[in-house]
Image (cartoon, rainbow, N blue to C red; front, side, top):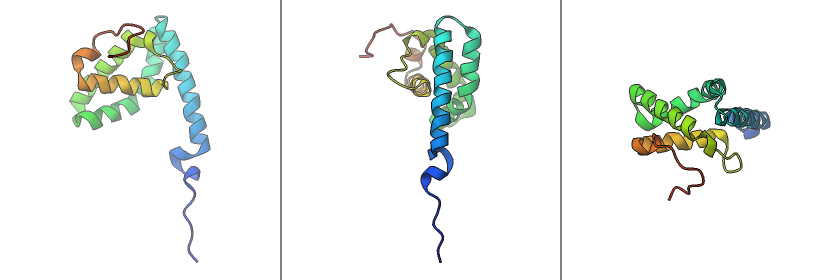
Length: 123
């Protein structure tokens, strides 16, 4: 008699509970980012605390060097603070928005440190 592995939704990040937790965490990030847009630096600290682990892991994948990953992370959060008014939760999740900023900072460090204008299409 062979035993079947558990269904994907029963383990790890693919479970319904994990999806619900991720949606809840993103809703908190959206609230925190809205507070950041009003200049709340403490809210930005909470955004940092909630996202730094994942973003640092992503930065390590991109740079393959811890020192460079830290610099990329600094550029990412600086750019996020400068452009937080551009965040639109209807267009992406907060985590995806931050990951996109990290990618932009990795591709073009000078562009990442330049504030984007609201309503720009990026073209």
